Length: 137
Image (cartoon, rainbow, N blue to C red; front, side, top):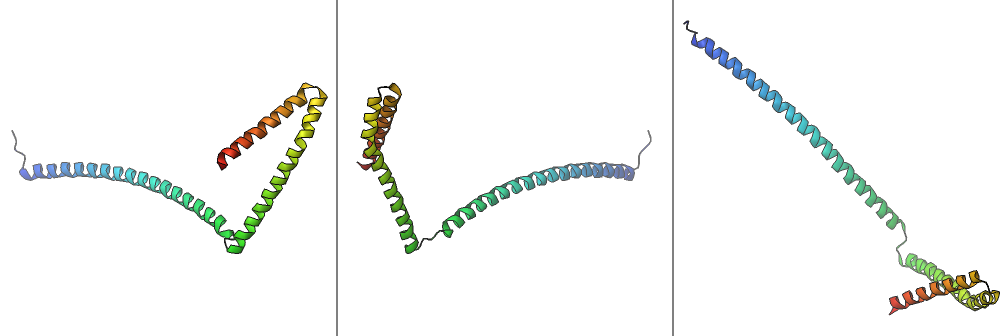
């Protein structure tokens, strides 16, 4: 059997080890590239969601800050609400005042549809009165 010089064996082992190291390094670089791409994608999504939430917050703050919250502004707003409540009260009183007349005309007509309409209106009013009475108590 012929002897192989030791330096040839060492050179061959070194070449094999270098090839294995290159392969392992290439695999590691591929894995790191994939990891980096996934991390960039996730970071982009997180930043996008965060920016969206910040935009919504900015819009809400802009709406609130654009309103007049000074004493005069609040007084003006309360005045508008009082006027609106008075208009609603007047409309409700007018409807209540008209109710007996509509009841008499519904009963006088003798047909079923007006009486059912009157019953529905009375039922709706009774429910609203009960609900308002429960919230005030």
